[in-house]
Length: 418
Image 1 (cartoon, rainbow, N blue to C red):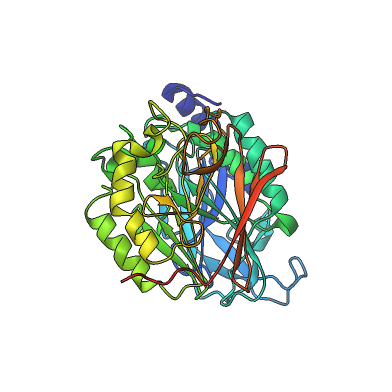
Image 2 (cartoon, rainbow, N blue to C red; image 1 turned 120 degrees about the horizontal axis):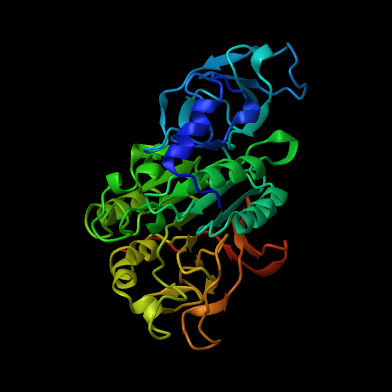
C-alpha cells in the first residue's frame, strides 16, 4: 500500500507540470445521483489543478469516433480536492440520457485533445432481459488482495457494483490510501468493449474517525468528498424503473440507526411495495458471523440488536428480496429469517459478510449458529442476476473465480403485513 508524508506529496506535485491527459488519471469512476435509466455521474481524480474540466459525450453507434453522432459537452458541477489532500477531484452529472443506451465519453475540451474514450450504459427502463450486479464490502487490507477481487469482478462484467463500506481503510485520516483504491478501481472497472462498471456506494466504520456511535459526516471527510450520493446523505434509495430498488443504509457511522433513519426506512419501503425486487445493503450486520465473545455474540451485540429491533421489522413487513451485510470479514449465507427465527417460506435472506479484499476471520463451527446456512473464511464477492420472470439468483465467487455457493429466490415477494 502506498504511503506518502505530506511534505513528500507536495514535493511530487510541484515537480509535475500543470497539464494532464487521461493517462495521468489517478481515479475515474461512474455512479448515480439520480435515475440510473436517464443519468450518469462521472467522477475523476488527478494531481493537476489546471487539467481539462470538460467531458465530451455522445450516444455510441458502434462506430468508434465516427462523425455521425454529434458530441455534447459537460463541465463539472463540482470541482474540489479529495478531503484535505491536494488531489484534484472533478464531477459531472450527465442528464437527459436515453434508457438502455450505450454512450461514449472522454475528458478534454476538444476531441483532438482526448487521448482515451470510455463507454457506459444507462440502465433499462423495463427489465426485459437479465440484469446483473456484484456486491461486497471491506475491500482493501492490501493492494494485492484488492486487485485480486477487482480482477474477478472485471471478468464477470456486471451491469454495476454495490460496495458497502470499508473501501480504502483510511479511517477518515490516511487519505493517501485512496490512491491505491482509485488506481485499482480505474483499472479493473473497465468491462468489455471499454464499458465502465458504475458503482453504488455505502459507508462503513473505516471511512470515519471514531468508526461508530454518534459520529457526523464531517468525521468522514474523504468519503463525502469522493462520492456523490443521492440526496447527499449516507442513507438513500436508488430506483431502477419499476423492477428494482436498492436501499442503502448507514449502520451508525455518520447517522444513528434509531430515529430519523429508521423512520425514513419504513416510509421508503412502503413507497416501493410494488417493486419486483427490493434489496438492502449496509455495513455492520444484524445477523453476523464474527466479532462476538461466543457464537451468539455475533447477533447479540448491542448494534446488531438495534438493527434487529428498528430495521428488520420493516424488511419483513415489506418483503425484502435479500439483504447484503458486511464488516465481519467472512463469507455468509443465512437461512431465511423472520421474527428472529428460521422461516424457509417467508423469511429474509441475509448475505455477507464483507470479505472482498481483507484477511478473513474465523467463523462459527457448522451448526453452532442457528441463523447460518453456510459460513467460511474466504475472500469473495456476490454476483446477483435478476431475471424478468421474477427469479433472483445469487452466487458467491472467490478470488480464483470459483463459484462456491449459490441460491435463488422467486418473486413475488411476501406482501406487506399490516
